[in-house]
Image 1 (cartoon, rainbow, N blue to C red):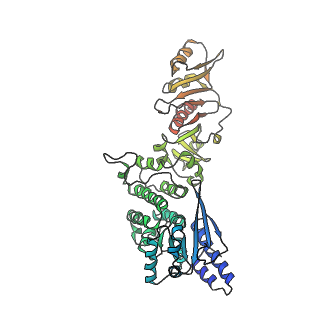
Image 2 (cartoon, rainbow, N blue to C red):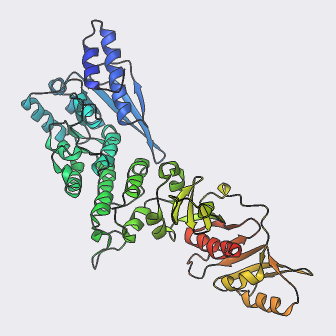
Image 3 (cartoon, rainbow, N blue to C red):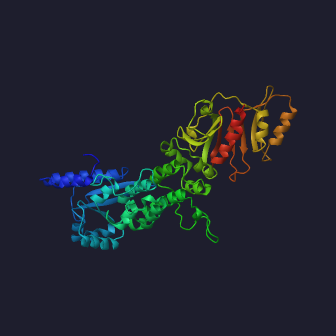
Length: 473
């Protein structure tokens, strides 16, 4: 069986002469449909079929470390579900009632709509409607009018992955709410209007958690595409941490994998740092690294720069940017990209790598210690906690005890001793870093690191202004 029209596959299965062939064929077709909707979920069939209180299929998934389960009951049609009073009987458990055939009777459809309104966690749908949102419609195409590259496209991908987990109410292709959700209601030619229509109906068709995630995705896309970020600036008297109407929190795995690459791939999405700070506040550097494969080739500068002060990192390194040596044109312009599973900054002749996992950067083993004369000026912009001076005649370790900055002591030593000093490492603090993180800059390995996680901006500054500076020219 292919991933073509599941409605046709179910009809074929229902036509078998033997009861067991009908059951096996129907369940195989439905499972394939569900896998097309949500490949990350575990889908298990039971030994029952069309039973009054035992599910036919059980859907299991994990989100934020917690396991969730939803039971799916197969019915020949939504009419048969209404006749059996299934919505009323099963409503408290919040299952899915899936009709194998499309219901055409308006009276029955209205009856089901009224019943699910009284059971707010039940989802009543049919194979034809699921076919439509998975682009397997009976006419060879979907009613969901998502043009390739449009904002509706990533939203539909999220809807497909959410409908069986968190859908509720009556989800059939002919309903106005589903048409607004999928784009079949006609707003597809105006992206912003389509996103407004999407957000307006989501709460009708999804339980609270799923609705919040979809609304957040819709808001992210709307603000990014329209450039209207006014809601990110609270009005006088509002709590600045909770601007009215903006859904925040930690982005789900689906949102990360679907919406973030889409936003970064569109050049017309706003450059407003407030917007990208909002997006970045819902993820971490570690989660960004975990999805690095989905960000290859994308310029991440708009996202990274406003969030460096808020993201935590463990190590940074400085090296030669080999792309700067190429005579041929390159797609790697200056800015932030993903390289080797980490964030990397193309900065002219230098490449600054940044990671939340210190195991990802081992550093070089053959770099020479830096010359004090090269470090004296850039080190004056930091608070110097400790430094090792290696001269031809002597080795001196200067470390803060009473003072929080030994720079003047070191300057006095180097000025009064007739020796040429090299510096294998220093311990510094960035004066503007409110955490006071102490960063070790190791010039023999070209690594900047903190004993505990530090603001990413602090590590990047040490890598650029100290490590890279000593290898300039």
